[in-house]
Length: 358
Image (cartoon, rainbow, N blue to C red; front, side, top):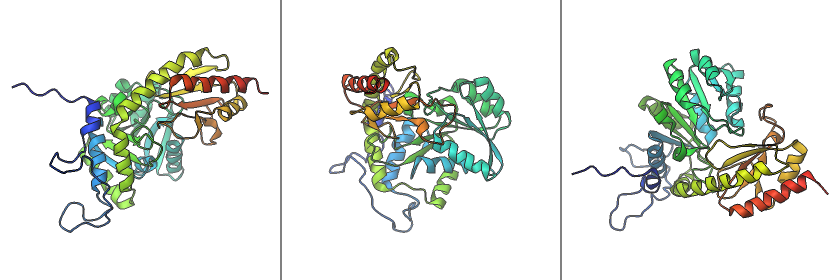
C-alpha cells in the first residue's frame, strides 16, 4: 500500500495543533487560565507550560520544520537566543535590521556582553569573511525596511563550517515563503505579532530550533526569566496562524499588483521589493514629502507595525534608532487585505498631493 501523500504546508497550518478528533471534543485547544497544575506531571507551574502555548508551538514548529518555543514578545525571543552565547562572543548581523534587534545587540556590545560587527547582508563574500571567527551569524531576510535578501545557500553553510550558530529572522517571509532550517540554519526567530498572528491584536514572539540542545537551553532561559506568553495571546496567535496561507497569498498578490503603479508614479524615486511577500518600500525625495504623504492617506493607516489584515505605512527614519543609511524619504508599506484598486487610489491621491501641496 502506497504511503499517503504528505500534507501541503497550507493544510498543516490549519490542522496541526488541534485536539484529538473525539466525540464532543473541541476543535481548538481552549484558553487555559492556570497558574498551578497538579503535582507529578510535566507542567507543575504556569511559568513552565501551558496547553495554549503548546498548541501554537506544535503548529509553528511543524511549519518551520523544528522545535518551537513561544515567548512574550519578539524582543524576548531575541534576548533568549543571544543568551546562548558566552560572554565576549562575536556576532555578525545585517547593518539594516529591525531597530529593536540592532538596539539589543548594541546594548549587549556596550556592556561587554558581545562584540558586534554589522555587514551588508547582500554582500555574500563580506558576510562569509566576517563569520570566519564569529560565534553567531544573525540574518534578517528580507531586511527591515530595506528589503534586502540574503543568499542563504551561500552564507549559511559557510558560517556553519566556521563554527557559528546561524539565526534567521523569518518574520517577513514566514515559513510559507522561506524555511531557513531547511537551508541549514540553526535557529529561526519570529515576531508573532506580525504575519503569524496577523490581526494587530497580539504581542508575542517565537523561536524554532533544529537542535534539541538549543531547545533545552532556550526552554530553561524562558522559565528562569519568565518571558512567557499569556494563554490568550497564544490562543489568538494560533487562530491567526490558521488563516496565514490565504492572508499572505492575498497580500502578496496585491503588493505585486501595486508595484508597476508605484514604479510608474512620478513622485516615487525608487521601489524596493524582495520578489515575494506583502511588504514594499518606496523612496520619496525627502523626509518632508514622505511625512506629508503618510499624513494624507485615508485608507492606509500610519502605524509602526505590519503584517496585519489592514494596510499600514510608515516613514522609518522618523525613528532615531533607524540606520542612517536608510533614506530619509523611505516609506515602508505593509499591504493588507483591502481591494487593490482602493489601496492604489488612496496612495495615488496622497502621493500627488504631497508632491504638490496646496
